Length: 600
Image: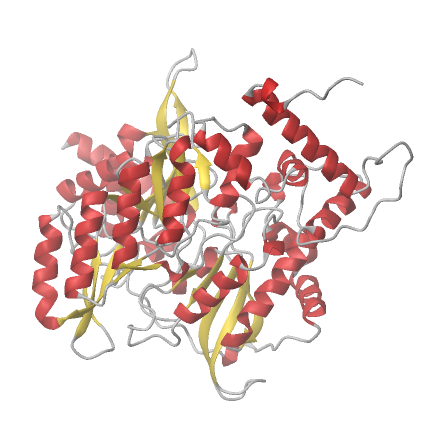
């Protein structure tokens, strides 16, 4: 009998192929797709934390569906079971194959080639709050293993870029040492859990979201069956205070509301359930009529997710979000399935018995604001479209520890807040922030400026969103000094809408603009107007297609000049003006403004 071939006679690529082949065989046997031995056997019942997902996949196939590649990859080798292979391949500097690029995202690592031949790591930071030591520690890790900078994201999170393959696992290990993790931060999982950035310090809030966000984050981390969903999933908790958390853009939003007398439930503070938000697909979460006690949120969110696990589309990635199950079923059927999972009925309240949400303040995430604790303040720092150098991070951590309560609070507006700053320390904080080249004050355009990574760091983006955002802000500040109200400008590079362009007053989505008969293209944007959030939640309306990036500053200026000239009062917002005017008339007004400026 021939001696078995030693594994060290295979090269690295052959070993990887064989490991994947063996994993595929094992997965097929597990689900009855391949007989073990010489005789066929009956398929065994799936067991373990992935059983619910395997059953959903099997049902899809039985009903004539064809699993998409990502579902096949999850089935062939669970990303968590592949962790030791990640360590070995990363240590060898191996570039991941597409299926492993997907798997490693379960560990928070995104291979972003060809824009950068390295990993980006996205963290998990429930409610967006870090200690000063953790913030400085991430900066040290970014120096040791990454590009020496970080980005604050639109989920009140941090991401670090330019992590070479051999530095991937050391970076993840370093996060654990800091009491942080990146587990489940990408791919088909529940993303960073957001909550009100001034939770616990806002005098007007109805509820402190920090315990809820932390509890739900821990619920996710400790239940492997909640990984491997049909597609990614977002959950947010809004405390009803002065800074919104944009929960209406999430798959599940829990909104703190006050119930008045006469309702079917006792008066007091409840969490209203809204479902189906996905702004990139032009939909915002809708009120279900369901209200919960805060302590019920985890179990209800869990049941909602399990209905999605069972019935989400595993064949078409473009239709794999919960919104599409809601569209197909309707809310009543979906909620009935949730109640079946829970084994009880959910409480419902007529909207007439829910008091209106407190008005938000678009400048509250910037500058100095009084906390509900006497003599203390929060101070919002403006970041250039979310980017921080590691030297700035360490210095800011020092300010938080020496002048505040030692916390760094990220916001969905790609900036952060110091909290617990005594009145006597406010001037010192402002001066030390200014010395770092950052600011605690912002113009009307820069306070609401949001941009995704763009094509400098993302292969999907059609344009350099961060670069163009700063150019537009500089141009508006120089040419439209009379702008006297906050305006939100959102730039996103592709249909994934990471910068949520559809909810901005003005939203730009990256596009390639054809400039010659030969098909040559330049970077540009489609432009939408009239979006909103919180008490003014609305999906914007497209007004122009394929505007060259170099023309965008002038187009934005023309829109804003039309608004300033045509608003009925100082109280009329840009969104209200666009709704009253209508897209056709607004486009004509803006184009007239462009002609006037050219003739001046």
